[in-house]
Image (cartoon, rainbow, N blue to C red; front, top):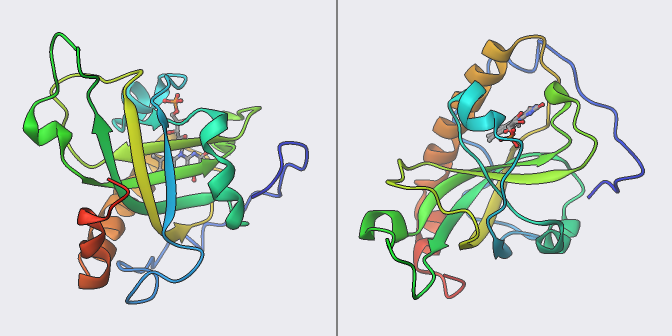
Length: 185
Ligand SMILES: Cc1cc2nc3c(=O)[nH]c(=O)nc-3n(C[C@H](O)[C@H](O)[C@H](O)COP(=O)(O)O)c2cc1C
């Protein structure tokens, strides 16, 4: 994983964006995957939901050391689950408490020129309520693409939509699907 002091060069290619594969990675996760992450959901800058139609749940810095086994910033795919605290007044409904497919952006968000590296998870599910502060666990199973710098918000939205499709296709393979019932969750 790139350290916060050594900001990596950012890919700025249009050629990368055309002709993206719709399924990525080997037929079964290969080391260093699966990578296990957990921690309380933190608020991001709030642009994901508003600007991009893609709300993200952020992990705190303390949850990120397991990602040091990968060297690349960029977009990853896997599964995540939100855990409702026992005494919560309005608990999460059953559908919101399942193990669900996710895409994770690990990096500097060059489009927004962030100063800190972040791990933001977008869960492919429409939640009935928000869950800031709740425990989130994730299993990262593969890598989709490098982080890109965009000249337009529309291009970023288009690529995030492709990331979601690629994640669902890639997780649909039997060796990935079985991680839904992994002991981590
Ligand atoms: C699947 C996915 C892919 C992303 N890819 C990029 C990217 O290539 N470049 C970039 O600058 N930001 C990327 N982002 C990050 C968005 O810019 C980020 O979610 C946005 O900054 C919203 O963050 P906020 O809710 O903390 O404001 C990606 C986010 C997601 C969920």
